[in-house]
Length: 597
Image 1 (cartoon, rainbow, N blue to C red):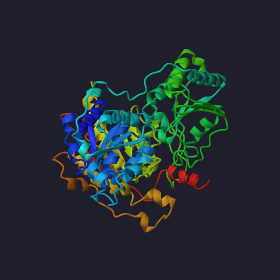
Image 2 (image 1 turned 120 degrees about the horizontal axis):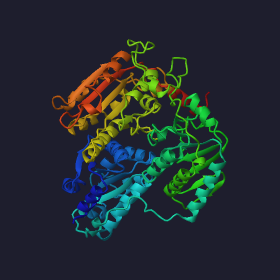
Image 3 (image 1 turned 90 degrees about the vertical axis):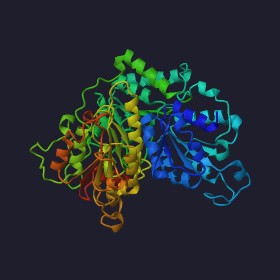
Image 4 (image 1 turned 90 degrees about the horizontal axis):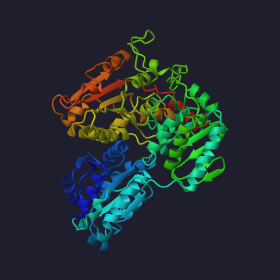
């Protein structure tokens, strides 16, 4: 078996079914093996978008792969790979490399700097890759491939595999394929260190009157995701999440109390957190936009900080343990001793953001049954303009179970993170890396992953892929709509048309021209990519009444109305909004960043 076939068959074995990327002369020979290994080649429009698509796919399926070419290709995708590293997303980056003869003789070939240094670009990726290797030794190739894939999954970070041209068709022993890779750490005996940590946590819980859990993004790493979810559900302790952890915990649980962002959350949520006497920080990872500008306003009470391989209780740090084992033991103990957990009362409301700018009022913390106010409500004027204050509560009530919700950084993510999601809704967003335009590419990968899940599911499954993006963000990566058309994908794309970079206006340059963009007619944009007949629908709304009518249209949104014989069309909706209107979470977060009250 050739090395290329071995590599791609390993990808198939770990449930990867699509490989993203762009062909180049240093990877063309390797690409010949993709389809014969049962994989689908998704040729994107450019490498940056391919990286974003791989990110979106990995967030849905657990891991992904992208193929680029040496130099120009890998550097074009490096922004997306760095973002995946920051956001803890595992991507296998395969780079077509020049042959050994070219490298050994330091030949000035194309795509290089003509200086003979063929490892320079790989070294650029080292800082944000958990492994960087070149497949230049056939005798070790299978082990290196296997170890690198395992490292990618367990670290929840990208890895880099340099694949030289002259190694693609080298024969190797394929027998390791007979043994599936153990991506997850094998279950181990409960260690003394884990037992000591568990007992110390139990002691603190039994003494606390009002303990709470706050979940952060690292708890959603694929190695500990299920253990984190089980612990929250079994404990019945009041649970909150930082914005970056949105979607990790089932928000229909009675003990889920909302999103906590320090100063950037509802008064009710702040008061609930303030009243606690013990905080369990599950996967703590403080960042500026995640913690309301570093002002998390957590009360001065004892904290138990859970990390992948350690637990800190006060000043004492328990190391050399596996978080999944500790959480599993705690879940079992709490089930056996209900007195440890706090009784869970139904949530009185969700952590809705305060009102959008200009209203002058703080948004009430609506109970969920009321959060989706319709135009039939006497307080809603159907002819009034769409505002962020109204939009995100309405979208929260429109979402369906198992939806995938991609949100670009800006008004989309700062609004969409603060409404309650139905069970199974999976958000895609960047709150640390914050690369605008990310969500368009991620939508491609997520929609492909969702289609694979639908096809593989034994039970009927329909997953809508929904994108909210600003006009400024979309103009960064709009050409990826071509891939949606080419792959016959049917997401729902909402474009917030607000004349430029609204979030940047709040940072600096309220009315400066550098925050303006050229307005496009987005309704016409998809037709440029030549979709098949009856596969495209476009809309434009300016009022609450128009948007409400669209959301209520059975031919527009409900997943149950589409299927194999009636595939979802690509739907693009312009939502026109004032360029100065924004979710209150934007100015509140920026005020925290700059030390303002």
